[in-house]
Amino acid sequence: MITTADRAATLPPPSPAIVFEAIVKQLAVAASYNRGEVTLAPHVIYTRHDEIYVDAVTLERDGKPPKEEKMGSFKLAGLAGLRVTPRRFSPHSLYNPGEKRYAGTVLMAVEIA
Image (tube, rainbow, N blue to C red):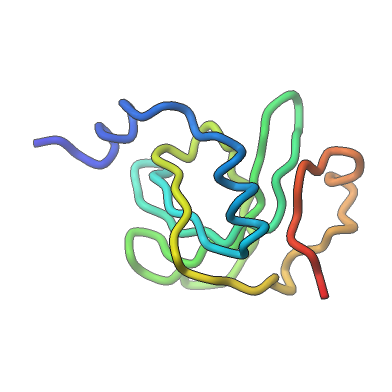
């Protein structure tokens, strides 16, 4: 039996372009992460220590909403099978574009109205 993790291991590395599209269109992304399926609302994509990270609100983990809302940091390379979904999102109040870690490292971020 082929598992989700097995399928994810055979996929090419995720492209930042997928996250760029999701941020611009404010569409959630889905991926395999830590042997589970996640649906994320990406708010910012940035670099840290020569790696690309995505800060996103987790909308679902293995098909269920999280127990609490929070902004998580995900290494782009760890999001296997990354794809844009039709699920729309609005910028969340948990996202603070003024955080020190984003200074000079942001590749793209949602626009706060």
